[in-house]
Image 1 (cartoon, rainbow, N blue to C red):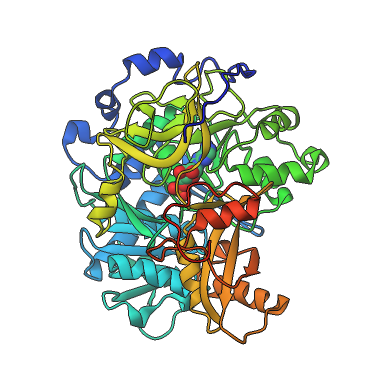
Image 2: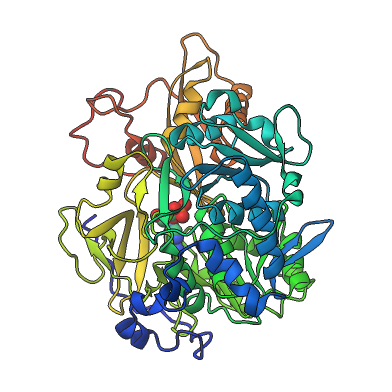
Length: 575
Ligand code: AMP
């Protein structure tokens, strides 16, 4: 990573909203302090902390009739005011309490997007228990790894997903709460209806847990990233200054709450700012999404590059069938955002797109193009006030302008992960250059202070904005009876960013065939998750390995892309 980028002065787009909540970026950056941001929370006066109270209950007195949750699907639309969401989540908290669930217990949420998911989420938080939302596409093995890691006492699920819950294999799991049809000793979600809506939140400390999100690394099982209550200071402030949320906004974040964007920005940031959140169920189609913008009169839209590229691929005609004139700001996260998409959006939606950069571990937006600052297409933007970002070389030395290196963030922002559940060593790896947090991304900073994404430093795959660990996919593939070993890489793709490609070594005597490739893809889909299934499989006789026997994925990738193989001094067999 000793590449130096040419100091090119890229064209910038004028600020979208110079009168935004943040106002002048440089001024905000030089004067902001996190301590000031805390003053908006009631705990700063009462000393009593609970994120559900700050996001929902606190608003009942002043904004009780404002819509907090606006749910839409193909058939119906449901709206919950702050008052209704407070009461419904209070009932759910009472249900959990009656089951004996207490502060600190882990409760999985494994549900399709629905009002029940959000009610459960806040019910769990009110009790001081720890919600662990998991994306609905995960299958049994995916759940088993995650549940087996942090020993939940309960899971809240739906009748459509409950069969995937590995009940008998998780000893700690005492309660399965099901929305829809129940059987056996499952508890019906509807039991909450008979409970009281009043529930005094369990008061916590700022450093007490808020939630856990599982995410992937390049080695080992998924990591349980634990955030603490204090994180909501970051959600609130970035909601106000990046998303520029205002009282009259209709705000739609398209991410599922199984991923961090779906909680930090699909739940906390809007509600903490007293703004409702729009939730749309159903698979992505251009028409369904445009229809959501039209029906809900979306003003601020937070989405992902893959979705935007797909929308662009569907063409202008589809967009022109809908009234998208309500949109005032568009944001994106998760993958590199191509400048073409920004220019296209500017023409077709009459709005550019503001790229934002952050990750599960950071809990909130770290770097962004702000509504009051010129957008630089192709750049992730500048660090949020109160956040210090830099580029270090592999020895931890600070690099200069336009030099590519490790993107790092100085410790001390409120939503930084607190621990990796049960894995202190993994946590320490992020702080090799303490006090800098090592993101795992390579980037550079240009002469104007804008940061540019360059790639991942490790083997983590980013497919359609979803982070997939190659190890998890390889482990699933080798469970198949004909597979000896597998190496998995991300292969560049114009729409999805990357697709998953697997190199598979078959047992001796097994015939290679297209049918077998399909079977292996299905095997990963059914066992792990559809989004983690390879799109391409190649049968090989052996995999490149280091002398100690580790699969050299970078060699697989370099060969796939026809690139130079780089330093092979540690290589052993099969290179
Ligand atoms: P996750 O933890 O699943 O949110 O994934 C975080 C990773 O997504 C980062 O480490 C980056 O590799 C990638 N990522 C997030 N935002 C951006 C962005 N704006 N541009 C490029 N890559 C991004």
